Image (cartoon, rainbow, N blue to C red; front, side, top):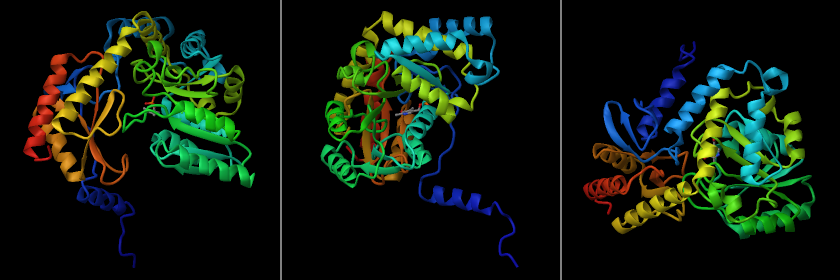
Length: 398
Ligand SMILES: *Cc1c(COP(=O)(O)O)cnc(C)c1O
């Protein structure tokens, strides 16, 4: 006789295990627009965990563009790009994104997540080797898995370890192509990849570099053009990945590079080919956000200035913010239960900041991850620091 008759019993068992380890996750509901302050389950709280870095998601011009785009073109696109869903507005946005990033061409995807899946799995196969930073975003990790390439994970930003792996792979001569892939800005630590050194290593070991700009677009580099532009490497990094969903306040992902790369992806990249094209409202809002960003180069600087202010304040209170150099600022707490308590106390003080636990970060490095926006005022940031002081004292961790 089977001991267990319910084939789904493992679901509840799994959930109980997660709860026991303080790793259970649940969805919280926001009841207002994505902004620097939001209503969360009936309470107005300071939003310190949004990727809407420039406030574009609720900017009046961006909203109006979405309405206009929808009015003119309708809601859905009805087909994938290769069937009959390739509209003139897609081409307009792709040309604008390529010009913005200083590359020959760009190609839209449904999201940054599916861009990484589709680009990595199209560029690498079972004969190839991918060198991946251990802190790369989950979508890069999943793209690597899908590609079936040999994946060599190197310690975070460790150029020596990477070179050692590149040297061995070159010597063995087994890999057809060698692809180095990194986040430009790491999404949980807020530090920056050493791109000039990575470009040199890529050249030395005849490999090519792919940089994910999700958190860099709109924030770093001249005019917010990203981290590749920050180092002036637009003509040297052959593959860039980014998103419309963060600084550009919309939805969708995109890849930038040569015209040939784009043509190759149109012909081979499954997450591009087998999905419906982005709708007009989404594309129009991204275009409007790009217009606003190009018209006001002070926006990215405002994010950086706010980041500096919050980071300095947290450091002064005694929090460890790792090597954060950007608008993503972790405050490392360590223990899982303590980190959860910290986020609850912060919420009591009126501050919404995410508790980040394994598997998103490694065990023992649990943290409150904060992210600042251009639209946060000095008063907002002082309010946040007050909450961190109060909560930290209560837990006796500062
Ligand atoms: C957010 C993010 C993505 C995914 O982008 P979406 O458009 O939200 O799917 C990819 N890579 C990195 C580094 C990210 O932070």
